[in-house]
Length: 583
Figure (cartoon, rainbow, N blue to C red):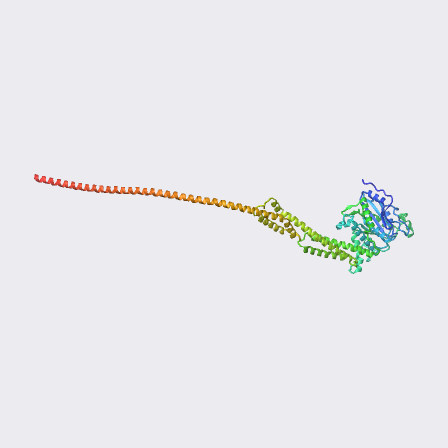
């Protein structure tokens, strides 16, 4: 469990001594021991307007912060009272009562006002009688100074990035109007205190310079304080009794005033938020100690403008804010539109000119009495510097992009060279062919930027030695291969000639053998023909002999038959003769 804070009475936190702010080490020690989240309520207003009385009521006491009853303010610097929060468990309510404005020099008043505004999570602005233009101008002036100091010190984790963060970082505004004597009416009807505040901060329609000067502080206050509340207080009692206000019981006070104070305290207890810095980080005592030291050191270092002429001070603050808005607009537009590297320098310059034009429009819209155009010239200088920076970054981005592309695209070729893939006859031609293919691939890659060609040429120049080495190796190996090819061709020619002559010889032998075979075949055929002719002749002779024998035989047979016939004839004749004889 966190230790309980025991602080029976207020303690001076920040004291103004001879125009310099000093922090009380005892108060810082108390803050550093607070581990719980803190709700910081600070009150600021003219001296002798009853601020300390309200803060005592928030502490649940009648006495504590010095109330006083003279025309001299009692609170010098900022006094702190840390008490357990009455409605938020495990929270500490840190009450900050400030030196009354108008009782010291303007510089001291401004410093105390700004510190109270920056340190608080609920800011109570205590004014008298009405909400008038002077009170509005003063609050506007201090809010602008607070924004400037927050920008310079940047304790809120690098500033505010979005609307929700802005609401959490900026304090809520509670405007208290003391000894209010007007009727809460507008346009013939009753209005609430909040409506009275809203009407007082409502800008008027119109564009002339007078209306712009009227509207400027109201618009700034509305923006700086997204959450606003108003409380009006009647005179607490007869003026002669105000000197004993601390000792008076509620029965001795105006009942309406008592109820108004009760309503005020109830709202503070239930609605005041925990002190928060950018990123939604809740502040504890140790964090609040760091904020106190940071802001006080910044103010003592002279980071807070101090001018006797409030119009000039506001002009400086407003124009510085306008310049910062313009630069932020330029950075935002360039961040959204520019993708480094750009393909051409003209593309970047066109985007710069468009963003520059928008930045100048933002500046002109938000600037205030930049009579000598000093802030405008400073803006132009800053924009020119940013243009040069973008051009430099564009070159670097293009070079980095191209170097990465070249490494990625040509890495396989470099590996092949190391492996000796191109250390062969014709390797140089193959190397150049592959390099041209990779160059074409490189050219096809998008968004290389303005260094594309230069980066490529530098890369190729860095690899020129390898190219020459491959070319020389190619020449040597090609000449050696040509010699080997010539010898191989000669050997193949001799081999072919030998084969040709062998073939001719073989063909000649084959022809001779064929002629021999033909001769033998002719001889054999002639022998066959001779034998065949002899056989034919023999058969012809035998047939002739046979025919002659047949003829002889037939002649013999014919003659034999003739003989036979003659014999028979003779025989017949002899028989006849015999018959005759017989007869």
